[in-house]
Structures are given as structure tokens and as C-alpha cells.
Image 1 (cartoon, rainbow, N blue to C red):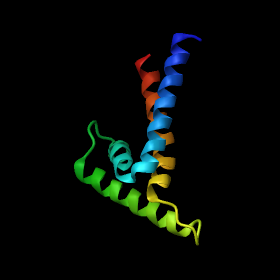
Image 2: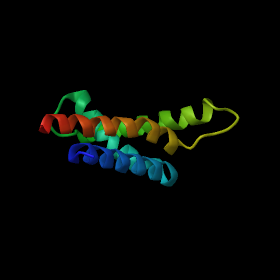
Image 3: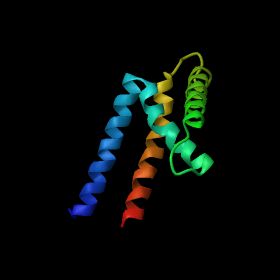
Image 4: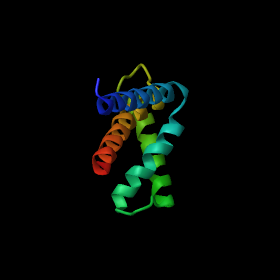
Length: 103
């Protein structure tokens, strides 16, 4: 296997493992990784704005909790599962996009 393909595979595996562990452990950690990146892109700033990141993180967690309670009623999904399902692919996108820019 080529070194570049191996690195991409290992990075993807790491992100997937982190997403699965975060889904089991709790949603707050994963939201803390995703919210600043989303806020930075929303306001188009070089650094993530603190207030916007906090509000976006809170909104993300509340929406994930609400969706987890309503979408699969009467069964409830933990908010961590939904935030990982949203945040995992987004963080993977950021990693791949940053890699392309570095090349």
C-alpha cells in the first residue's frame, strides 16, 4: 500500500474510532470539537469566536437531544449518538480538506 493511502486510511480509522468512543462516552466532548469549527465557518473568521461557538454548541446538543427523543419514539437515542453521526463525517471532511490544502 502506498504511504499516502496508508496515512489516509489510518487517519480515517482514527476518526471513526474517536467517533464511536465519543458516542458511547458522551456528547459534550464531540460537540466541543465540532462547534468551534462550524462557528468559524459561519462567521468567516480566522479564529473561532467564543460566544458563537458556545451558542452553536448548545444549539447542536439541544437539537440532537430533541431529535433523539422524537425521531425513534418510543425508543430514545442518546444525544451522543446523533452528535457523533453529524460531527464524525464533518470532522473527516475537515481533515481531508486540510490535507488537500497542505499538498
